[in-house]
Length: 377
Image (cartoon, rainbow, N blue to C red; front, side):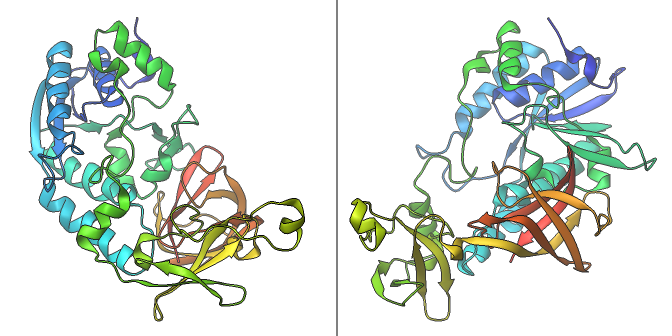
């Protein structure tokens, strides 16, 4: 059974598919071949530092890619983008953490590696298009001929448009997302029916260069501990000590090792209010915490966003109401945009947003259309 009919016909044209060894990219390649494309697979090696450790799955992923390619009947090339990744993604990741922010390297990886370095390489191979197993969509803009729109995927639980919001018109014009209209269960079913062993392979999680290892342990390799005080934001009481501001993020509850405290209503009911990270004083190396999930310090109704990137190449109309996410897997929240300048704007939300985190991306939507976004400051 095939449901490749919703994909543009290939007519023998060449598409280069980024194969990761997982079920999503495998099915993307399969559907494109069914639709008449000449499919070439590329396995991107983006990280080399831990190639022989238990946390790195690169070797097994490559074995899976070769098995999939043989089953589908396509050629595969292995391309090493580790140098580009370290320079364009990982170095920025460390700079942001060192500055006390919490970056999202997957956003940068998509814009700089998967849809820039990979696209450039694919064009050299003679490709007309590239494709990936991302859950997102692309279509011609119905109101602006020659322009393209980035769309949310049909499967809202898997939608990855948040991570793709920096893609520009040149990148979208050359990109296919074969899984745009599919649900994950359908993708696994297609893989199983095609005899692809990755149909039941577990999805990869977390940041690609960290894998399944403890995050703090990884950061300590590159950003050494700088111990300091943990203080209550409301009254400056010292509650404990931290290993470094780098290792903490806004809204964090676990790993503070300061326990709960009974007071006021909590004492009468026997409940302990949890502590949450609410801020960082970089100059004094102090980590500030507040008690209670709904503390006002964790609620923001207006946020500043910089490093703006608009999919259309220009900002949306500032007077309209849009929706935005301030982190992945967050429901869309109604907002307005106040354009400050070409690189910075302010988002005003109808309802306060919880634990808005500097360094994360704020991504703006109009219904299913991803308009772009920027970095929260």
